[in-house]
Length: 483
Image (cartoon, rainbow, N blue to C red; front, side):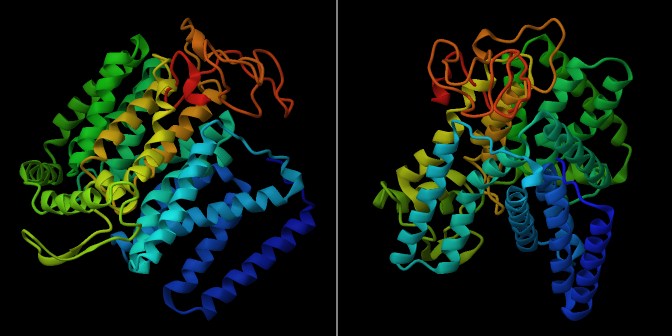
């Protein structure tokens, strides 16, 4: 980005911001002043470095919740949402500044994600009309709207290879520090941040050599140990399925990276077994592994019954069933959130909602499967893992991965896969052609603007690499998925 300003202006702006921050800290009571100050600093930082929005939003919500004295899930969600809203404000600010010279990156999945956002708003109105509790409506709307929210934040803040690399390094560095700090801490669920980083790291390990590979293997081994010691079955399922897909579908580069990572993880776990904290965390993990579903199955049955009575549009966002007996919990209200994400969608949104949620995700899967040795396969494997894991998990902060991973697939395809392995030819179907022309045997384009043919220049004047690969969600032989 090029924000050109005179030194005097920069000094005056810094003095003004410092004065405002000091005033807010003195005037506003308790944590409110600190929250507002953090919001202002995030807004300034995201305006200067928009690629930091998503890494900071994913990891910073937890850190901010702890800094403000409450590490509970409610505080984490609130801070997570505030950071993302601040990122949206920063994106709008950059659009209003002509000096940035930025243009929107439109993808063929935009329409499907916009449709999901619009249908979510209609379902929320429908829920209010039916008399559902307004707070429940907001909670259910958040669970679904977070998917298109993450998708569009990614496509607006990670639109080029430099931004993708910077965001990846920031995420990897912060996740490594958090994982190392909590690896031997009993009672930590963990696993989510590590599982998101593992498959892309496996690709990089397969592509690098020498000391770089050693460093990456050490980092990946720590993430592997964190996932193994997690107390969250959906994380085990998502990570395990992702690795299995990479082994079965991947080429030599992918399999080499998987082998190095698994070997490093086994050796690290063997060494960490001497730690008392790791042994205690292992016992907590084994307890979680043997624990029954408890009230989750009866809870899901309640949601399925709601869907069965109103299968088309569900009972509206925010639906809940009053005074239901659940084993271990007694009489309680069930809904709108369930421990199975698809039950949440069906009960609140019906078949219309299920199709609206799955269509933009599934239509990108064929992109990554076409590249057997690239980043696209890593993100596609993760997408498949979280799609299956959503049968058994309904996290309170929402399945934002289902919006982030498809966006990363399309963006890394646009960026040429970030890294090209020497001697490995890209799939023929992934060749980028001139804007508006068919890709492969099908019709349609991956990007409606900013894409150019091999060696040609796009609308922004930047030369585009010939072949394109993808980093998150797959595109198949025929990009009908992109129509």
